Figure 1 (cartoon, rainbow, N blue to C red):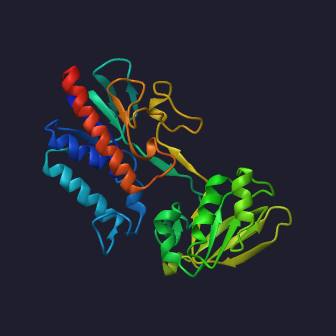
Figure 2: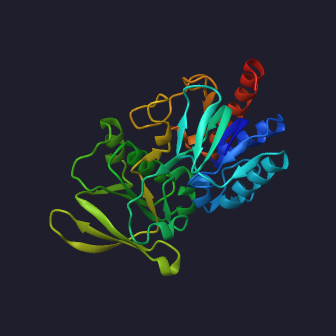
Length: 310
C-alpha cells in the first residue's frame, strides 16, 4: 500500500509538532510519523519552567500533548509508526514505514537526538526524578544541593560549569584518568572551586528507585576495585547525544557525530528535504529553539511547494 502526501514530518517532539502546526495551518495536510520516541526528550522531563507562556511551569508530557492537540486541530495527521528506511534520490521521496510505504513531496526531518545513557538498572526509572541529560533544563531544581556529572568531554565540563550556578558542589565522575575535553574547558572546570573530580571511577547503580528520587550512587574504582556508596541529590549525564539519522545514511550530509548539516538554518543538500530541532542542532538543544526551527522548516516547505508544485 502506498500513498503520496504534500509533506511528511519525521518526529514528534517540539520541532515536529511545531512544523505540523504551521504546515497544517497552511492547508498542506501534513502526516507526522511519531517514531521510536513519541514526544522526544521532553516527554521524559518533569516540570518545564523555561518555555515561554507558562509562568507556573508545565509538565513536559503535557506540553507535548498540548502541541499535538493544537496541530491536530488544524488537520495534522499522526501515525504511530517509525521510519525504517528512506529513498531521497527523487521526488516524491519514498519512505518505508514497516510494511507500508509513503511518498512525500516534501520531507521535514525532526527525529531529534537521543541522550547517551549508562544502561544502569535504575537509571531509566529515575529520569525526571534526579537523573537528567540536560543541565539547562533541570539544574535549577537542585539549588543548594550536591550533584554529580558523568563524563570526561566538553559536554561534561559544560554541564558541570553551568551547574555550579545552583549546586553547592559538583563532582565530575570519569572512567579514565585523562579527559577528552578541550584544554580550555578542562582548565575552567579544574579551577572552579565548586567542582571536584573522581577519576578511574564508574557508576554501578543509582539509588533510590523506591523513593522516586536520587539519594546516592554505587561507585567502583577501576584500578583498585574499591566499591562504595556516594551520596548525591542528582546525576547529570554529560556523555553526549546520538542524533537519530541512521535511516538517512549516505543520502544527507552529516558532521562527524552524525548531526545533519543544514544551510540557511533548515535546508539540507537535497532539495525538498528540511531538518529542524535536535537532529541538526548540537549547540542549544532546547525546547524553544527546536520549536523555532520547526516553524522555519514549515515556512520553507510552504515556499518550496509553491515554487515546485505538490
